[in-house]
Image 1 (cartoon, rainbow, N blue to C red):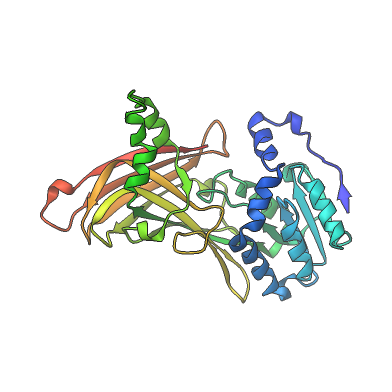
Image 2 (image 1 turned 30 degrees about the vertical axis):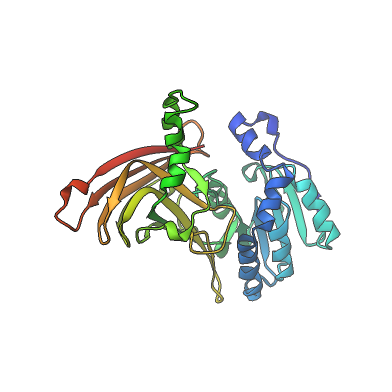
Length: 340
């Protein structure tokens, strides 16, 4: 079943047009579908808990190509309402029909905030809303809107719990390639680019062997209860050096947990299988000389950018406390980053 687009993209702010248009393209959906850790986590959460889906009405927020909607239908949902603003929904319509789910899945193009669903309430909300650094692109705001408007009391959200982690890494070679490179570019001083390179965090796959501190879970929330305002945070962390080495950067990753008797967790850390979210790397403007057992106490803050709420302003502060009498290694610092 299909419905016409209820949102005029041309009337949206440019930042919103750009965001939704980025999901029109085939390549980004191919990357997500081929991310087996991501896709199989959703499938496992539904197929291992089919009793939760049997006869239920499901809302898929940001359905993309429709893969999660079809999982839900196959898990026993009575009907699935699948919403997406991007033009990829045209392919989703073909795919849903081709796989025999046309009578089970209704696809609606538009912003969820502009849509009136054909039903007053749904039993389950499914969404793959997570971004880099978990909260980048702030699609979670739309899931919270759907929760407050459509979810029945006691209904389910997949996933429903999230945790964010931070750790220190040794990354001297890559930092030299990315940051120190600008000090001498073919004999010329390009140092004004150093700040540009520093301010924007790097999204990349980090080798687990690069970790030189213990991780710290600094932020967790329950999507059943969290408010939009609570997603802007300021949290403290404490890291312990597990080896003697230089610390050049911090990395952040996250886990998402699904409800049900059969627990399923989607992990994105460097110690687990690859995901397209990778990890987010924040280079410091100094190098910490760590000895095993040293403690880094710090804080991390994140809030939506005032000009474009889908982007994030992030601040990390740190204070190295040594376990030896060598106070010369003690350093403290702070840096502001911008995820755009």
